[in-house]
Amino acid sequence: MELIDRYVYAVAHRLPERQRKEIERELRGLIEDMLEEREGNGESRKDAVETVLRELGDPRELADKYRGRPKYLLAPEFTDAYIAVLKVVAGSIGLVLGIVFVIESVLDPWNILDHFVDGIVSFITVAMPQGFAWLTAVFMALSLAGVDGKKWDEYSGKEPWSPSQLPEVPDEKRRIPLSDPISSVVFIIFFTALFVLFSDKFGIYLQAEGGGRTVVPFFSEEGIRQYAWGFVAVAAATILLNVWKLRGRRWTPRLAWTHLAIQTLASVFLVFVFMDNTVYNPTFVDQLLQLDFLKENSDGVRFWTESAKLWVVPAVALGLVVDVVQTLYKTYRK
Amino acid sequence: MSEKDMQELVGGFIQELRRGTIIIGVLSQLSEAQYGYSLVTVLEEKGIQVDPGTLYPLLRRLEKQGLLDSQWDTNEARPRKYYLLSELGKRVYEELCTEWERMSAGLQALIDSQRS
Image (tube, rainbow over all chains, first blue to last red; front, side, top):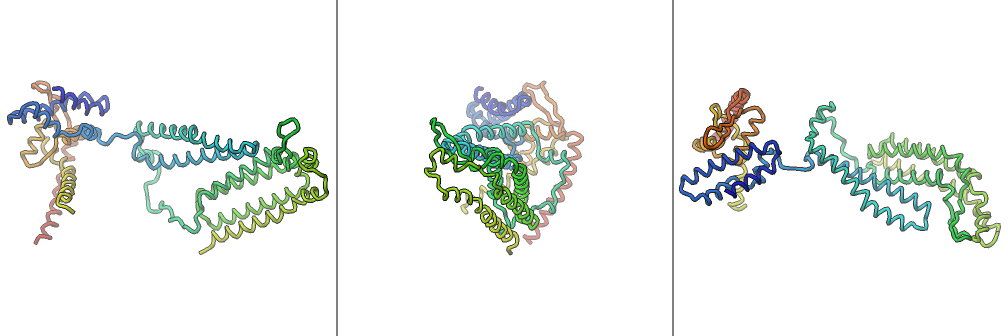
């Protein structure tokens, strides 16, 4: 009977290979038994088959019952972990591409729009699909292998749940928004790379006589280099501090005072560096004159470029004061 | 809520009750070997309705969990898989029975106390 074959197949092909044969045999037996009873009541075989199969119901549901749980690609227990890791992956990819964009733009500010479009395009067409595909593949493999989150906890000796593990209810007033540490890290990496690695490319870009571009840097590469250790130290301290912020996500007195200590040291360092005459490009004005950017060699221009550094102290001091007030307010307000 | 909606709700609850108790019904009849459909008939005669599409997968599961032993009988016209309580199955059944009696007595007392 063709309809019975089709039904048995519809159930069996949804089941694991090694169970198929036996379940098929049992199912056929069952259908025959059920038919026998119907036909005994005088029903025609065709009608009886129809009724019996209807009674057994949707083959998909019957297969699910044999399997014990519905079919899945990603085990339901993994859903939370999957979403959490997906967020981290998307965030990291975005962060890396953002940093690449910023560095490219500094090196070649003429094509900033191209860099931006490139960044977006590679995020959408390459980086995210790749990240998504690999992550999903890993979780599918874990699900397929039947890795069980509970068993994993047992093996790794994780303590059973107790009320003391409950995280604190987040304090909205002292909460650190995610954007704060992330933008700090992006900024400090950008800033450090600019001064330590690309100080010779940070300046005013002009058309050179040959038609190419030339840059008149603001700073002297050798002058900045002697402070490279300080920039790197400030960056390292800032990144560590922001890792702390990311983990706690709330302002505590300890975090606040560490933050202020690092900011103060960094400010002192910046003032120290930018008050040092040797960090500036000594021939800045001369180069601009040579390239016809400045038309006349006036004392006024020289005076202004040389006194520009005097603004560093009040600017850094103002930034520090604002930061101190903000941080203390966020930490100690009631 | 319409009458039909209410009937649907009741149907769902009854299904849950059946799902929980069917194992006791099945184990109770398997101190002698039976095949799936004969079990359906026996249970139905005693007023316990069971859908073969539920019973067959359940028998396999209980076998996998070690509560039942099974054997194919290929002598008859139709090959049939016979199931029988294992030693473990017997002990599990005893415990389930004790718990069931305790539960149904408790529920009965609750229902009676409301009615009187």
